Length: 405
Image (tube, rainbow, N blue to C red; front, top):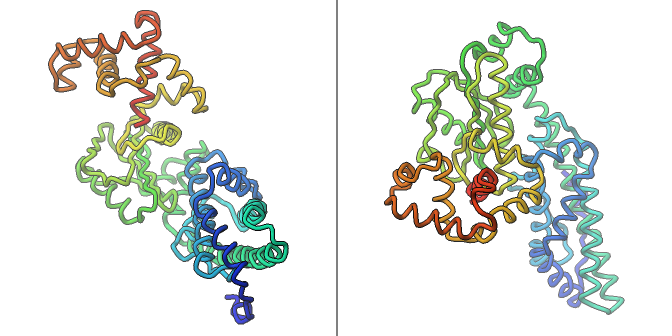
């Protein structure tokens, strides 16, 4: 690819221009957060990408991809200032393409790189102008880096266009994609007969269902499927339906109303979100949507929890989609307790879940009842208002903090 272009002689920068480019590249490797926010926001303005802007998983993948390309270009310019930069080969681009193609997006997504490029170039010019006031050197730097950035984006877009063609061809015969198409009909409420759906999915819609979403940033599909198999074995199940929902995500349905998932059986970098129990076609849908909603809440909270059940996050998920609103509610409700010893907060949280029973709380926390009483007293002292006036709000705020760990 681009063999003719690669043979064209690339101009070498002067010593002065090289020094400016290297200094600028160092800045680009550790940019201010607001730069990255603007850079990533520009990418989301690409054609049709607005359709997935509300999907935190895809947005996070796009951000990783954008920031990886930026870091790659800057790193290469530390070694060879102003030179042509090769397309990244670490797999991020290919994974993003495959994820987008699975969701029905095509080459229109490549406009994201063009819109991000315009912002990156404006920010880069600002860096260069801050590093030198020598007009001739500045002109040389801008000419060289403009070419370097432009060709890097051209090469990246060309490589991704090829990846799209390959991914679409692969998905045409991908059993995961075929299953997902059938699952999508059921989730959308389409009038597909149960018998037909069962034949396509090799999974029976009648009976109980517990849906699970498994995800892990950068994990291989094999590792996700291994975790799925371990859950099935631990629960002595002989069947399940699984759909590859992304490069590092699996949607799974287990035909049971009592699914047990142990944290010790799940790799540290992986997350398992379990939906509620459902029955029949509607239960198949509702359990899955509960798991997805809980996953969105976890991402919003920045939680690192490994195994989560949707009912544990139902209250928090219903509170607000705006993290700022939830944060203000938590701070106002808990006051000084929000910054207190975590053991004090956790004691009161568990006390609420144990229906305000100190003895049960002590047993749950493996501590003495007198310790529980002391911690509850201390927690009440730190609250901005008497517990008797807003106990429900305090319990909800404590749950938010618990899941933000």
